[in-house]
Length: 305
Image (cartoon, rainbow, N blue to C red; front, side, top):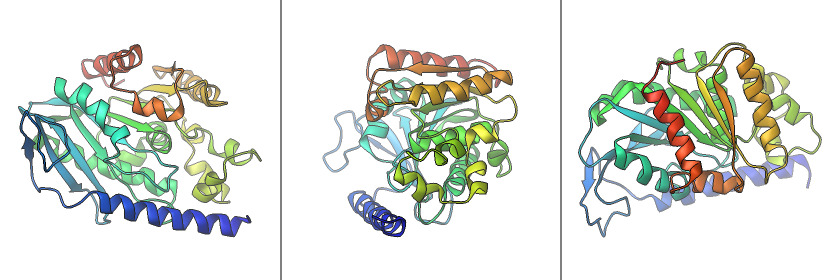
């Protein structure tokens, strides 16, 4: 299959995936609402928890996020803002693997959890997507007191392509602060799809979806590359990787090594799980969840850097 047909196939798949995702998430209640302790037959969201769904942070239909809150609204609570994966061309903020176990683990202990959607390739490129994440962060920080959260106690988390996007903002936080976002406490990349974009694109064996996402312009490669954009100390960073994917932990370690050379508190957490399980299993009782929780707890109680 030539490059044009490959890109056309990806575009059609992206459009189909978005339409299916939109169709499976029918109209939800507006404003803050809560499920009773026994759950709700008409709403599959967790029991004994409160929500505000489809909060618009921009004008595009995909520029929305969902907020998960404890049943008793907290005051100045810590916040996790999570970014789904999907190869930059698919994925959804309500994907069960993205929210289910994490919400059960952390919202029930008093954390606000915000899961965002963002515009997808081919409508935009990954740099635009990072700016969507930045815009969502700024909007969420500006309104989080409505949900009981503290705008100065945010942590960014993302899986796969979402891991790349939060890593890019971590490396070049001015992308977010220029849109009104406040500094955040730290970033967790769950098996980021890529750190060094130019190196990946110059590798002839890179996945075809990288061509679809990053194209042929080296200027975009550099602008959307966390490794390239990392030029100074950044907020605390945790890179989760898997030895089951060739190069995953090497790439994570290279990025963390560069970050620490600038004085950043950064580390790699290696988990013997699949790429998908790195996301799905986080939140279930395990040493993995414990380490990530301890990383976040230390930031919530400590200084920004």
